Length: 203
Image 1 (cartoon, rainbow, N blue to C red):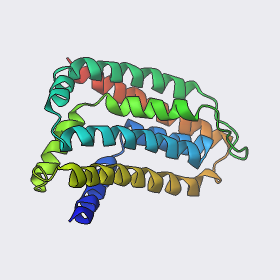
Image 2 (tube, one colour; image 1 turned 120 degrees about the vertical axis):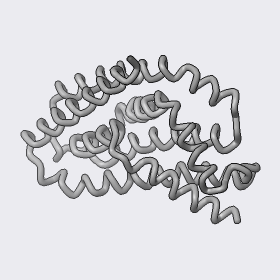
Image 3 (cartoon, rainbow, N blue to C red; image 1 turned 90 degrees about the vertical axis):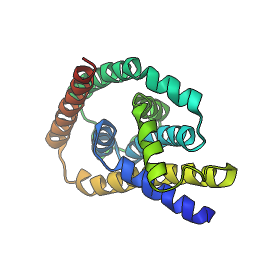
C-alpha cells in the first residue's frame, strides 16, 4: 500500500514539474551554458520546494497553508521582482566556454535561488490538495503513507529535471559561443516576460 502511494507521489511530482515555466527555462539555460550539474542543482532546489509544499498539503498543516495563501499577493510580488532581476541578469550574462568544466563555486547559490523562486508560488499548495483529493489521498496522510507520498513527489519532480537536463546535454556540445549567447538572451527575455506576467496578474 505504501509503495503504491509512493508511486502515485512520483507521478504527481513529475506531472506538476513538466510544464516549462521560469524554473524549467533556468534549468535549460544553466545546463546549456554551465553543464548538467548546474541544471540538476536547479532541479533539486525546485524539487525541495515541492517537497515542502507537498508536506503542507499532505499532512494538512492548515495554519501554514492558510497563512501562505492569505499572503500570496506579497509573496508573488517578491517572486515577480526576482524574476525581472534574474531575467535581466541572465540576458546580460556572457556564456561560459562549454569546453571548460564548471567548478563547484556558486552551487549553493543556484540551489537556493531555485528553491526560493519556487516557494514564491504558494498556490502550489492548493494544486497539491486538489490533486491529492482527486486521487483519494486526502485520508491517507498518516505518518508512513504521508511520508511516502511527499517523498514520491520530491522524486518525481527531480526525475523531470534530470530528464530535462539530460535531454538538453545532447545539444550542448553542438552549440558554439554565439549559440550560447543567444541561449542566454532568449532565456532572459522569457524570464523577464514571466516576471511581467506575475506583476500584471496582481493588478
